[in-house]
Each structure stands twice: as structure tokens, then as C-alpha cells.
Image 1: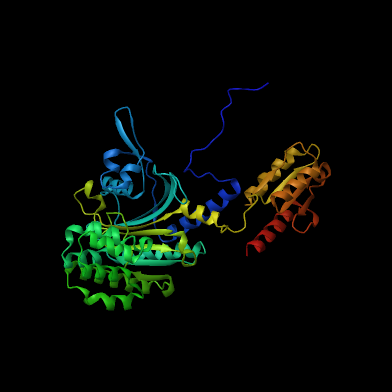
Image 2: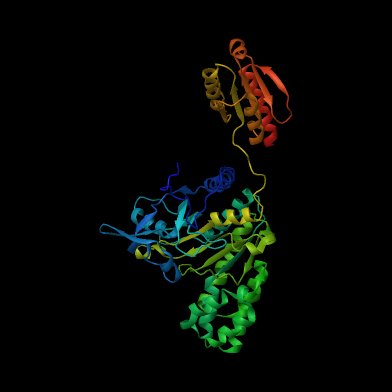
Length: 444
């Protein structure tokens, strides 16, 4: 008989859903990121997904306003968080009297943006953020610490990266020196898309904006410079005596000195004047990370310095610097390009197969092995022994423990290595030793 009331199962577009074997890799990568954050003494923070609209939108603007999930519930005007930085600013402002500064926090959590789903863009995605917040002031060493955190994180993930670093004060000061301060925002928007539209089109847009042709060329030249820190700083230092411009030069030099002290490989970072960052809360050091062998993937991690993001919530100055990995997008890109590596078939390391009326003993054994850090399960399905063995092999489970009534009486069990097919009759303790030794060698 047909049930005409069945609902067709379907999923909203723009929301990632992974099969278990891919979720294992996803979780492993995320755990590596968290491990590095913890090793660098960042504290965990978990803010609510929902925020009051006036709080979350205090310092938004532009396209973000159109993308926020916004709704009312009773008398509350609410939004779903679109990033983790504004909730951080709200949290610090609310708890500034109890926090120790500099306050170093990391947060791994979902954020939501109601944009049109397309390649690399999701409506629900996970960000892996780390920020350092100061009280009244924050030394430039913090900027370098965040850059070093990026370096260590991608080292742990085993990715070859290039961190591109700049400082917004340099372009702000240069634009001001040329006499176009009132057009700063529009100029930065054009310079930010040089790689997408090309220098000729960028030049035309600057001229159409009312920028003198000679000045347009100067701006394009400055924004296109990239390479060794000391070489670029030496080249551009005399471009302008503008105070803001020189402040940017000084800050980059300080950050460069700290990066050298961190012993980051020289080929892992450069000074790139074309890095601008679109968010309007960045005020100084900014950085973007790419995979140099896969530039087509775009930016995989970014961040920068913000002098007073919490200014809408408190009179106290709370400068900060932070970095963020768009983890869902990164994982999806790796997946689509077959770069996830070997996919695990099952997390199980030992499967116990009962023969006859031995289920109770098998459950007891599974408890023993799990307490000894072996991922173990009992196959209590009603299929034949042959079918269970075939299933364990299909899942890639390395060991099977066969427990029949004779094994229960003698407490000597049959352990089968599914990789080489060798079977041994051993006590539960010797089975544990064999499994542990094998897994340790395989891990090494």
C-alpha cells in the first residue's frame, strides 16, 4: 500500500552535510587547528548564535546588512551571527572588569549569511577564529603573534602557505597626501580588486572617480608592490612624509622584526601592498593567506588589527588583532579538488564477533578494550559469520576478535589481523598488546 503523505527528503542549499567518512577528516582537521590555538595559550569562547539586532549590526554595513538572517520572536528583534568578531567585542565589553588583558581567545563555531549559494560560498559555515584584545593599548607584537599562529596552524595541517601582509595606514596616508581623503573608501575598493579586473581597468575606474592620471598610476604602483619586507619598506619609505603613511611604515617594520624573532621561514610570508581587506573595522596591520600552488583557491585565512571594535559598546578603548579560517569553505575546496587524502572507512580499530551465546562476554570485552583506548565495537547483527567478516574487511577495520563458547571457557580468543590475514589465539591482555603495537607502528 502506498503512503501518499510521504515527504520528499531534501536539504537547503548552502548548508554543508558530510558523509561520516568525510566528517571524520573534517573533525580531525578542526581538532588540529584547536590544538595549535591551545598550544599558543588562547582560551576557548562560545558565544550564542542569536544576538540582539542592534548589538550585532552596531558596526556592520554594505552587503553584510543584506545577508544577515533577521527575524522577530515575541518582542525581541534578533539576528543570527554573521561572524564571530562582533560577538567577541560584545562579550569583552560586557566582561571587561573580570577579564585579564591582553585577552587571548579562540572560537570555532557556525556563522550564517543569507547570500546566494555558489561555489565556495555557504549560508551556514564554520569559522576558526583567534583574537588578542588589549585594554587601552595593544603592542604590535600581538599582530606578529597572530601571523605566527597562522604559520603554526597550517604547518600542523601540513599545507604549504604564503602569508601576505600589509598595513592600511600606508594607503590611507598616501591617499590623504595626494589630496583624495574624501574618496578613500572608493579608491580602496578599486585597488582591492586589481587582481580581478586588471591594472588597466583599475586605472580607468580611478580616473572616472576623479583621480588625476598621474596620481592614479602612483596609487597602482604602490598597491602592486610585493616581496621581501626590508626591500619593499626601503623602497616606499620616501614616497610620502604623511604622518599616517609613516605610521604604517613603522608598524610594518616592528611586525617584521617580531616575525624574524619567531623564526618563521622567510619564504612563508611577504609584504604585499595590494592587500587591503574589505571590512571597515581594520585599521592597521592586515594579512591574507593563500596556498601558493593553488592560487585559484583564493584566500584561506585572513585578519588584521582593529583599534576599537568595541567602541559601540563601551567607552574604554579595546584594541585587538585577530585571524580567521573559513574552515567550511577550505574543506569544501579541498574536497572538490581531491586533496583530502586517504578517506577513512571506519573509526573502528577492533570488531568483536560473537559466535553462539557469547554476546554478554563480548560486551564485557568491548568495555575492557575501550578503557584501554582501543576503539572497539561488537557486531551483534544476526547475519552469518562470513558476512560479518566480509563487512569488517570492507570497512577497513584492522582487527577482528572472534569469540565462541570455547573461547569463553578458555579465555583464549582468536584475534585476526585483517591486513595480513594472520590469526592468533591469545588472552585478552595479549590481544591488547598486539593491537596497540600494530596501531602505534602504523601511526609512526
